[in-house]
Image (cartoon, rainbow, N blue to C red):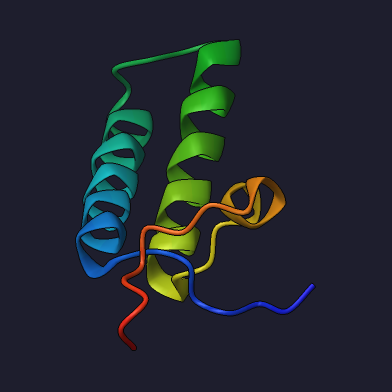
Length: 70
C-alpha cells in the first residue's frame, strides 16, 4: 500500500484543529479516567493524519477527499 496523500486541504485543517482542541481538553483536565486515554489517542491520530495528509482508514476503504485534478 502506497502512502500517498488522500485528504483534501480542508480535511487536513479540520483534523489538525480537532487534534489540537482534543489535546487541550485532555491536558486541561476536562476528562479523567479511561476517557482521558481515549480522548488523547483520538487527538493524536487526528493531529498526525492531518499533518501527514494520509488516513489509513481512507486507504483501507479506498476513499479520498483529495481532488483528482492534481
